[in-house]
Image (cartoon, rainbow, N blue to C red; front, side, top):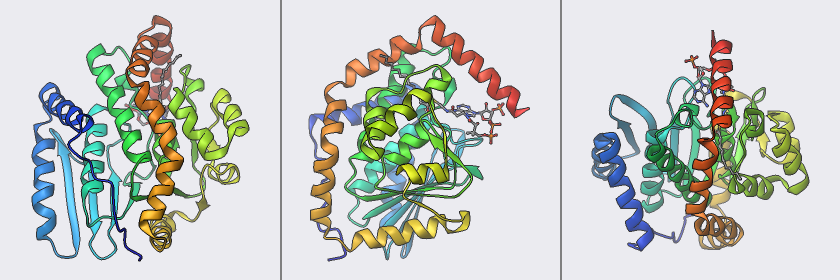
Amino acid sequence: MGQVQSRLTISPTPTKLAWMMHLRMLTTMHGLCEVRQCSKRWKNLCPQTKNLQKCQMSSAGSSEMLQVTVDDKSGIATMTMCRPPVNSLNLEFLTQINIALEKLENSKDCSGLIITSKIPKIFCAGLDIMEMYQPNVDRLQEFWRTLQEMYIRLYGSQLITAAAINGASPAGGCLMAMSCDYRVMAPGYKIGLNETQLGIVAPFWFQDLIINTMGFRQSEMALQLGTLFTSEEALNLGMVDKIVPQEQVMETAIQEIHKWKKIPGFARQITKSALRKPSIDKLHSKREEDIANFRDFITKDSIQKTLGMYIESLKKKAK
Ligand SMILES: CCCCCCCCCC/C=C/CC(=O)SCCNC(=O)CCNC(=O)[C@H](O)C(C)(C)COP(=O)(O)OP(=O)(O)OC[C@H]1O[C@@H](n2cnc3c(N)ncnc32)[C@H](O)[C@@H]1OP(=O)(O)O
């Protein structure tokens, strides 16, 4: 009973076909041939290993941005982000995450997923701001589509998902964490949707996600003020579920997934899907409109100016 009995697999629907075509286009556009090779290698490797299955997916020129391991005994996968300096999400990194999510979702050996970071003190700095500054418009649109895809896959996953938040988690990092079923965080870090502080706007699906997580009133304040909460504040608001010392974050996430695994998988999955489907369907139905809104907003002169100033402030701070 502890095992997941059934899992929705990705069938060869038009959506899947579109996704495959999208991946193919990306590999051509951005020289991601290694991603494809590695995803093949992943398929070949996993059945051959005995206990700990290890997969390393890398894109051209940057090795081990994403490490995925699946513990054979427990069926718990760990996805470890390692894109220095701050795990910011660019197009290639998001593509790798999506490929890994698809593989894990389709793997009968995997029932749970933990997302964490290898970079000290950083979980994920959110979107790579350089993707939005002086962008190539085609790439900008692909970037946003790929982020939408990540949210749809992670929030809609049939797996038991946990974020082991072992560092700062602003904006897109917070989106990623909130898309999981459970969040355990180390003390002393910041998390939240701080978009307004950068002069940008969290789109409707970011807003829906935070509202679903911690309720309307607290979300409307948090979103307008762009508040980054301390771990302790986030716990009080329900944005995260537990705080434990840094060195216990992973173990706590594993224990929590074991707890969830005791619930009959089919019942849990149907319940999760019923709760999350309306938000996911909403994005599906407005996907192209959302991409166009994002493109038009980001390419405004005033927004470009604001982003430029923000990048400068980050660089000055880093010196
Ligand atoms: C109707 C209208 C509808 C409109 C719809 C429009 C929708 C638009 C929405 C767009 C949504 C965006 C969501 C996002 O995720 S935006 C990104 C937000 N992220 C942040 O603000 C985080 C910024 N970073 C930090 O706060 C800190 O870096 C940190 C993560 C807390 C880490 O601090 P630390 O002191 O350790 O590190 P440094 O600050 O010194 O940074 C080290 C280097 O990393 C670079 N850096 C940092 N963050 C990013 C990033 N997000 N992208 C790219 N690069 C980043 C930083 O510049 C340093 O680089 P350097 O060493 O080269 O100077």
